[in-house]
Amino acid sequence: MAKSLDGVLIKKAHKQERYTLEEVKHLEACMDPVTGPLYFMTHFLKIQHPVRGAIDFVPYGFQVRLIEAYHNHKDVIAMLPRQMGKTTCACGYLLWFTMFVPEAQVLIAAHKYEGAQDIMNRYRYGYENLPDFIRAGVISYNRNTIEYDNGARIQATTTTENTGRGKSLSLIYCDEFAFVQPPEKAKEFWTALSPTLSTGGRAIITSTPNSDEDQFAMIWTEANKKFDEYGNEQELGVNGFFSYFAEWKEHPDRDDAWAAVERAKIGEERFRREFDCEFLIFDETLINAVKLAELSGSEPKMTMGQTRWYKDIDPKLTYLLALDPSLGTGGDYGAIQVYEMPTMIQVAEWHHNLTPVQNQVKHMREILKYILERGAEKGGAPQIYYSVENNNIGEAALMVISDIGEENFPGLFLSEPIRKGHFRKFRKGFNTTHRTKVSTCSQLKNLLETNKMKINSKALISELKTFVASGLGFKAKSGEHDDLVSSTLLVIRMADVLADWDPKIYDKMTEKITEESMPMPIFISTGF
Image (cartoon, rainbow, N blue to C red; front, side):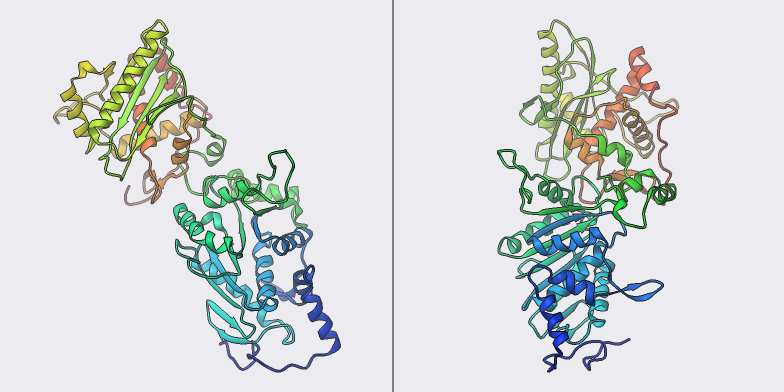
């Protein structure tokens, strides 16, 4: 039905009203500074039921507390399971806010355009079903923006890097904030919005969780740090946000029997994310999302320049070092990984995007020297193997190694075996193809998910959380990097070669495919 300014679905601006005594009492109750929003929503808000049509809003206990949280705190972040009515509560509160806060400037920011439209449609439905004596008159009634004769204005849009920038907002509502993609967009949006909030604007953020490293997770984590320096618990987090959480069990229509059916329908991982509100990755990552949530990493025990060391050298063990070179011009990162064998424990890591190839190779040599010297200090001589990915820029790294002289690098330079019938000119190092990458990704997946490999680097764990399915393989999500993952994959390929020589490494590597191992997902696509 087309919207009209003739009072059919909306109230005309500056319309004169005659109020009964009962209507005046209702208005006074709606304007109560403490209970006004809840009174307004329970007496006048109608919501659209898919079967029953327009019905009165009757909030559950957890919804009452949520509405009170919205009203009683300047900034609120709420994490709730799916289908708990969090958007309905927010729409009802925004409707009250624009009706009873003169000159209110409200912005709705959703992760998708369809989401913004859905919220606005719910808001409009609530407005159109209000009695005239409650609602403000309309000056402008468009698809995405409504302006009222009390000076209030509400607008719905998608979340972008510039959403809200330069606006004087009274209240911003961010819906499903954890699913704004790419994650960098949410961070830029929050950076642009912060000045508005610091000058008095209010924020309501709601979402089910996604990654534990996105902007929603960061705000949630800080909002739950509520202890001061003396150990006293505060109402607000260190970022000034009030955090609100409700369990799925608080919904009267949900019990253990419901949960069992839902788990069977969507799987344990999705249930834990969507209903238990665990920070499990939503995307189809190489590593199982539950396993990724368990990986925590550790702080380096020592740093040498830009090299992070997580474990001391054991002269009785074997060490593998892999360099995945880059141009060093500020784009992709050059990365070095060091693992000990046969334990498959990460020992050290180097990562930088402004270091020229020549210096990347020199960093590799310095790390090799440290391993040898540290082993000698402990009365031994660890076995050391190193290699380089020779694709593209890798050719330049091989030339630098040749110029310096392999004899000046501690350890043995390892190269992939030459396949029979392969007449191409032999090149040192390892060449990565689609086939070798998919195969090695499968090995990495099994090693981590069966606890036969230990990662200490938080940066590497972070990359694994954005290392997702793409076509027939895996790669970093748009805007993210996977250089630490690539250098780790190279270490695994090196270990495969060494497994033919060293029985201990062979035993470790042949254990990687077990009955408990999770299979690689199968994807049908036209490209990598």
